[in-house]
Length: 339
Image (tube, rainbow, N blue to C red; front, side):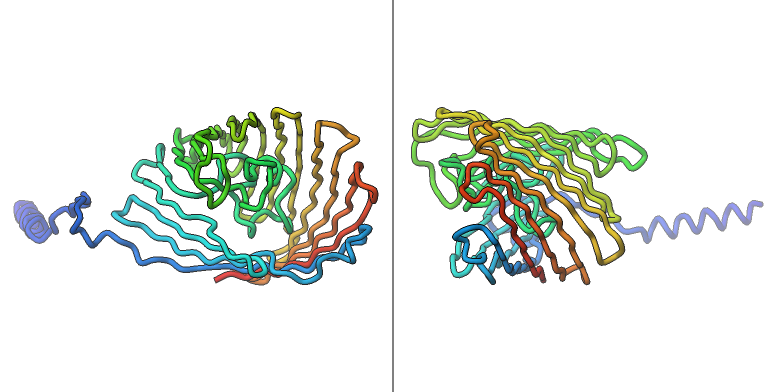
């Protein structure tokens, strides 16, 4: 026994002598620091579209077009600072989409500065690749667009500063129960500096009772060019790794000249590894009046042959009650690829 103990003690001494010193992961700051930088990641994606419409004066639709082409670069500096630059062109219209830096040292309180998506709605921050439909909903376009006139040419973006985070681990899978975002934006929309000293204040609180299921509330208040506007919304979103998805949101906008409301629901069911079918219903009511309602019913088969390649067909039946041509049909075909 003494020999065994002696051998064990000798082995322990040898292992202790040869053990590496603990790594010092503390990052120092300074103007001459050149390491702690990731290699920039370059990527992009393309969505091409064919559109047919039998609406009066639509001339059969827009035919073939570039829905979007995006290129981006992102990476990290000093481990804790993430950056992204993303640009887009649509049929020759080239512009900046995102440019921001986010300090991510503490996952419960990350700080983002620059131009990026407003923290309003589940769908708005989603990538066009992931929304399951051939275009963003009326909800996203009407409530998260550029402030003046609710135009959506900027894709729900503005320049500002935001704090967001996740916390309170629950369940056997140890997922975060609470996610929040709160920020201040210029209120002028994409690629514009502030013009009137007014600001938009936007925030969300979201709960995840089970992994993949999010329940959220969203608020927005602001003023620009003499126009006061307050918005609020509620939504639910569910996704799982098998490809099942469900998302629905309802929102209300109150402004100086009137009120609007808008809602949608979209669900997707995978039939196999490469074929998924989704359906969507959405309504936008200008002035909260059914006489001005725009309602669209959609069916969307999707064929994803590779992680980076898919095809999508979408049929829309439109009921635009304030239009001279109240009922019309659309067919969209879209090709997606990315790298």
